[in-house]
Image 1: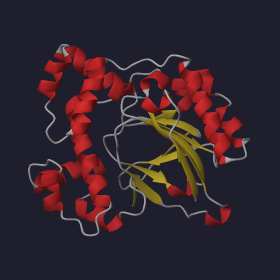
Image 2 (image 1 turned 120 degrees about the horizontal axis):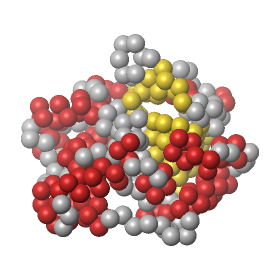
Image 3 (image 1 turned 60 degrees about the horizontal axis):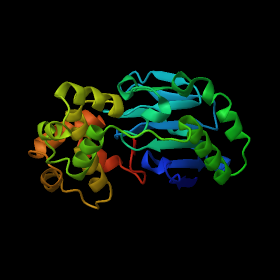
Length: 275
């Protein structure tokens, strides 16, 4: 697959981590195979240019298939979910930075958490025709430019600024998720605990305590993914878990599998794990 990712120019780069385009030659068409997508903070847009649908599967023995349109908004997830890798032939996407999706989607993130929904449900008429225009655009560079232009049109000339309480919280939590203390962050934010919780769920999609747990899990995955031999006990200490059993419980909760299963099934892509 030819994969191209770009960071948009300012001011979009403060809110969007990357815009990407993936295109696989037809001869590389993979067979049907389920892949587990690991959760991460932040929302995303995914536009399927190969099929006008998106398929998600229940993570149980029945493996029921849920079909959405070709353009979807993927909210912040706190658990893994299953996709069909055979549909990942020509796909584009937008990865929002944590707290960055609200100005573009214009929907409180807690209403989108742990689910994918059709992009039209949040963007309305503004997204109609977007997928078709991308299909008619011949090169990845041109498609990325078109999608960035569409994103700029969502916010106009002035990009709103996240509340100071949210900026403070994200700075503290991302700098040291293992030692972040919600009570201290709330006190320093100079807003009430109730207002802080409401703002946090609105911009991040989940509560602050679960968000810190997710950051700790992500630090674990980022480290384990590149390790030749994973020392889970050492990682538990390095990533801020109480002990190895605590790591195992959190891993099951977020990844839907055990650490040992992850170690044997991980592949080249950070957030994709074979089922």
